[in-house]
Length: 82
Image (tube, rainbow, N blue to C red; front, side):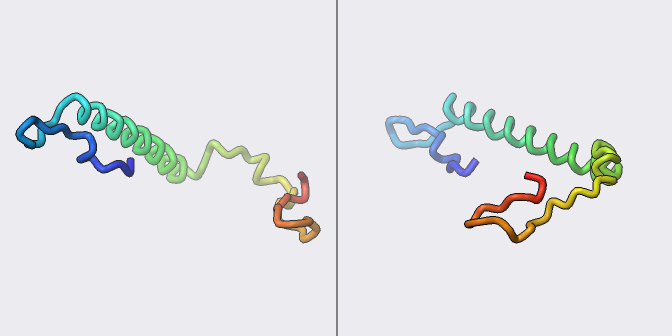
């Protein structure tokens, strides 16, 4: 969330800042995004710590070479299989 949190506060008639429903909606969005990122990060770190068990052994045994083969035309990259 690159939005300035001060954009979500409100001001009374005398110009004093106060927190209202607009700020709480913003806070809920930030909290939801933070929880999603934290959950994903923790899952990725757990997978790495466990040696990436979700990656099948078939992919490790594959002899397919997906590196650039130098025969592409223009500025687009394609693998040897595509």
